[in-house]
Length: 355
Ligand code: NAD
Ligand code: WQD
Image (cartoon, rainbow, N blue to C red; front, side, top):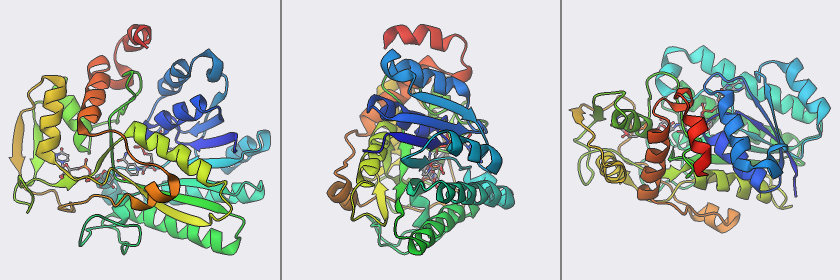
């Protein structure tokens, strides 16, 4: 079993939840993150949640993946069995405005990482891809064999990195690479001690709902109510971040399978939920009314997207456990305890007593 794991972007939303599960699973974890969209409080809280037995198995280095010298030093100091690569910029709108930033950060960062992995004979990788590579799917559920396309520069960086990974594997069959295509990650650790804390105005549905519920924003704008869906709003496959974290452990285990080359798996629940159904689930969990402003469709949005989960179930032995009620409960638990995310005054001190 791989024991020393490098996690890029491990201070971020999905990364921090995965790092916690890795520690509890007995792995030693080195996190590198430039804290561009996160903060080191998340790392400290992961250590507290892991408890004294496991906390010392985590070390953190504030490093940008584009800094090859710094990256080289990390690999010189530890022999890694595998890398989980979360680090990247992910805001679709920003990627349209700043495509070069996205290509520089996501592509150059990944190429640097792969080069240093080659130089250090570390050839096991789990990469954060996205359902965005299905573009506007013609049918659902999306299977891993669907044609790929990108609707924006962010999506293109995911597509290109997937292709780079396939080329790297074709050049050297010793590589073992798993590309995980996440659908719509939501929720938080059930302690409410770590969760999603986006910088600036949230782009995604759940963080926006959460900020309305805690009074930071007055209403949720619903983008589109004329889709051909049960209530006219868009349909997505929301997946609990704790399920995703477990999906990464399953992928790591799979890397030890001799048959693995460069593989791709969807991580979703296989169930579609409309925007209004998600709002209703959150209202039920929080007891808060979410005022709505109905608006036109958001440019670039697909109508209905959800995953086929058969391949992950069959080959990773992974299946999402949580539904939208648990996702909403845990999202609200995090939001109500940390209305301003990791910047909430004294939230940490009062929370740890409840763990
Ligand atoms: P996040 O922004 O919370 O985490 C990404 C982390 O990477 C951040 O902590 C950021 O500071 C760091 N980072 C970015 N560029 C870096 C660089 N050059 N060097 C070092 N660190 C860098 O995002 P997340 O939601 O946790 O997403 C993790 C990964 O999963 C990303 O690659 C994202 O594209 C992908 N993904 C996310 C979603 C989603 O909706 N959250 C869906 C599908 C795929
Ligand atoms: C979901 C639904 C919106 C906000 C994005 C990225 C994708 C992936 C996941 C990284 C849609 C509606 C949203 C709001 C709304 N990320 N909505 N009001 O668009 O499925 O996927 O995040 O890889 O690449 O594109 O997620 O949460 O933005 O939207 O009505 O304020 O909620 O129109 O129908 P999306 P989302």
